[in-house]
Length: 122
Image (tube, rainbow, N blue to C red; front, side, top):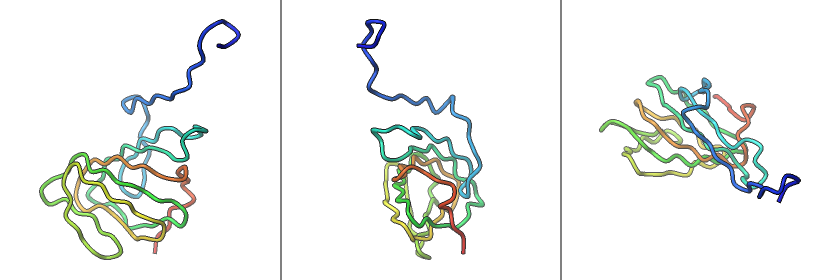
């Protein structure tokens, strides 16, 4: 209970429709749960654009959950192209050069918490 006699909320809620999108190498990302002590990462709803840039992270691990993509949706991972479809997921460890090929919507779980200073390009 807090000082007003009300139960303290111990959970966290995000409404991606109210989170401002920011430009990223993939397209546009809406990022949630920054600085939530109980969650060691961030959650991103990302709209992938046709011109997604190949990049990598030195410390971040990203898990992509494909929500929407066309029949030709693919991920490039260390130079290898793999076909993807909705409801598939892939873990991308630090150092793996990656990008999405084609327009898609993905949910990205980023651990530890996302830091723009950990986006690297060859």
